[in-house]
Length: 321
Image (cartoon, rainbow, N blue to C red; front, top):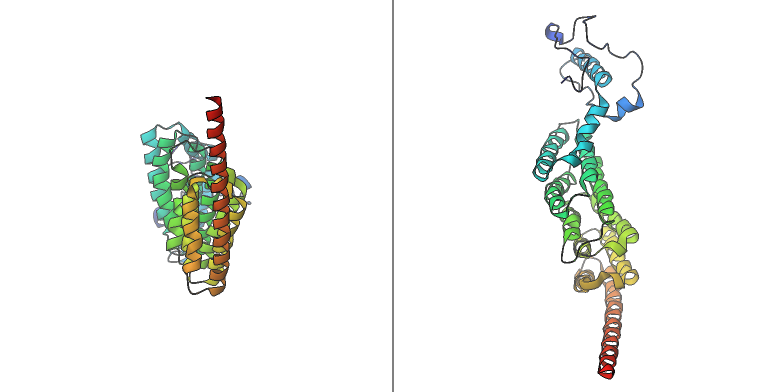
């Protein structure tokens, strides 16, 4: 405790739980406003309990804690997580998620301090060896998929936007041949799209994926699989607004990034076909029919070009022989 509250001492004052006035070593409650730095650490605010007296006691205790805390030492815990070994960082992340769950489950007063720190820890450790990062992300992906369904809409949307930030950062790293890390990284979006009951969350997922496609399309490899999986789920959405947003993204992806989709065209065709098969939104189905026809033309042209290139290469090899 002395690491974070170096001026604090053990003490109590009867039922009120306050130190006696003038007790040595204790910091007096601040008389003015807290500094911006102190506010930024998001110490738990006072919760109203059984009486106004309890609320006053907690308010004074909280103010004293904020004034006494060593912010640098706390920040060092999370930034220093990058120095932990493989097993230790997985344990650290696991327990940090457990703490965050307790904060978010607080009835009527959920807290996001640990949730924010989880995002920071993910940033600090993203440069680890991919196999170690895969173990970390196995824990985090389950956590984000869970928090993205939180009954508090603000918290759910914060979790989705945090996923977007982390995914955009992760896609800066080139994916190694024969690895599927991108697909696993983007899988929480797919899990959330299928489980989220909030239309705002489903809309935000599509917006986040659209942003990633526009900014990181050239870096996406196995991630196309998860992206088309999300868009296929959007095709079955009962709300026209969600289905249309999903179709627009699928259509634009095929048109603008056809050459980058690579080995995932089968999933792309299946995705567009999903919009054609759905029945509630007839206008979307008609648009999907035209899109699928255009997609077939692009695939035919690409196959013809590959055949011509292969024939030319064979002819050159034969001439050289």
